[in-house]
Image (cartoon, rainbow, N blue to C red; front, side):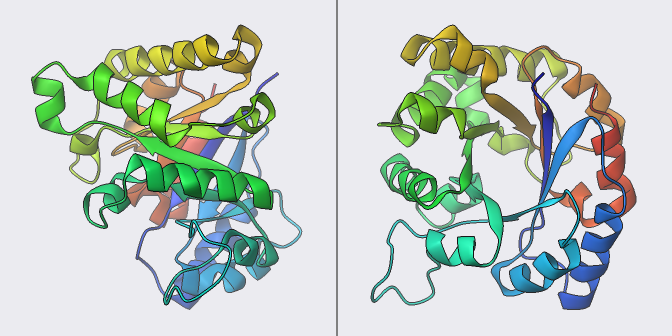
Amino acid sequence: MKRHLIAGNWKMNLRRESGIALARAIAQHPSPKADIAVCPPFAYLESVASALRGSSVALGAQNASQFDDGAFTGEVSCQMLMELGCRYVILGHSERRTVMGETDEIVNAKVLKALAAGLRPIVCVGEHLADRESGKTFDVVRRQFERSLAGLSPDQMRQTVIAYEPIWAIGTGKVATPPQAQEIHADLRKQVENRYNSAIAQQSILLYGGSVKPDNAVALMGQTDIDGALVGGASLAAAAFLAIVDACP
């Protein structure tokens, strides 16, 4: 049976000691319902890896380069992340797309590098409020799916996680209603089926992200095609994050 995945995106928050304490608190509460991953800032990956050692909680990074090595000041390669013990990497987050100007093509190059290195990419897709209000949500998300995940083999698709994050719900306190989130997840699963087959579509892990909190997690993850959550602000407190983990059906 497919397990849910709850991944915490710490973004540019916490400090070394508070990050270690948070990781230890999460590691002490394994879940029979879900796989758990935490994604701290690059600077704390090694410290958090040590805090998680011996637990079932996976380490993830928040980004990676599309290059293996070279004169790319400030970049971090997928091989470097593997050496630090990462199992997941978030790619194409809306903050990378909108603030840092990453295109679907750049995200796709990163996805392929991550998979080649042995990392599981968590690939983010999602629309702006203007897209939703103008009825373009499905077109935008499908385009991001097609371009960001271009060229993946069936085996690579099985290793790839997709996170639907409506941009208007990230860090705003707003959240897509469970039916709104479900209809996009159902369409994403259909896109996977159309490109590959129904077996791969059913095996694919589709997360929801965007102001996920303990008080809405049960309703969101009770939806047929939502297989977990990519959690932002609520991942910075152990009690809130673990409550979301416990909300998995």
